[in-house]
Image (cartoon, rainbow, N blue to C red):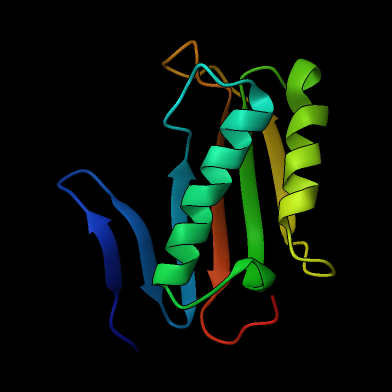
Length: 122
């Protein structure tokens, strides 16, 4: 068994955890909630990319993604447009997308991913 490495940990959570060659990145949201779905998705993915780099991984190593949206019917096309341009060609992870009620009304999307550590194709 390998050691568990925690990234940006506070008393409540770690933003990312590396274990056994896998990085688990907790749900990421935007910083600027005045943005539309595309802007909020870009910001969340930028945070994810930063954690992937910290874990010595990249978006070509994604294994799975979970995406939560405030209004999937209204916003899924815009979110998918940003997602599709962000993911590495030929490296799409498994993915689930669901509608949720966020605690904050101006939050539109939250994204959580799991990726393999090491190697790079992107």
